[in-house]
Length: 240
Image 1 (cartoon, rainbow, N blue to C red):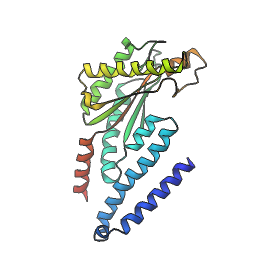
Image 2: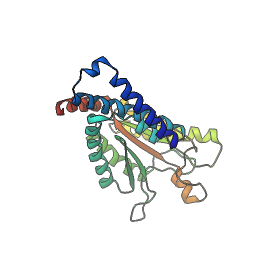
Image 3: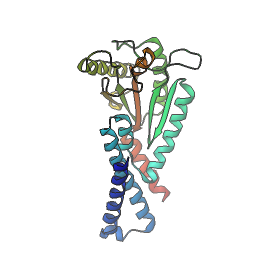
Image 4: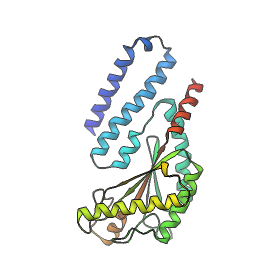
């Protein structure tokens, strides 16, 4: 964390020096300078945090923070993501929704309040979509279709049973199975990004049957696509 904060301070200072020394910037109004610093600063900060977090293994968090737009446009995107996040929380029991930067990370608790299974999980050494997983995915798909201007990162994971190389391939098959299910039910292929990490990113310690089950999973990361970003920037300009 100390290294990340140092990077942020260096990046922010460098950005201010760059803007203050630019002839074009000197001719800008204070209001316009604020917009420029906010937007550019958000991109710099997002890139620094995203790169550092990604190196530590949490690629979902790195993807979210690396996609930051910043400034007024970032606030507009964030408001839209807030609404989508609340809808996921409300309509999908068992979903764990984290708002990070200008995006959303969705994981699942293994059980609903009534004790039934929830989320996108897999049996040992399996990558087929179970009926309970379909229930969660169908609800996710409905929301994805209501908010079409987003990119969807699908990440596959395994527990630690078996060899590393095999588990990497198994996590790929799981991510691809979920992505194919999304495609087959109407989600455009260009929205999907597929990644897989084998057993390298557990969310539980693999010491019990229950914790292993939590690691046999697929997670989602939702970020603004280029259309949403451009529309947010246009809207931001009208607010100045």
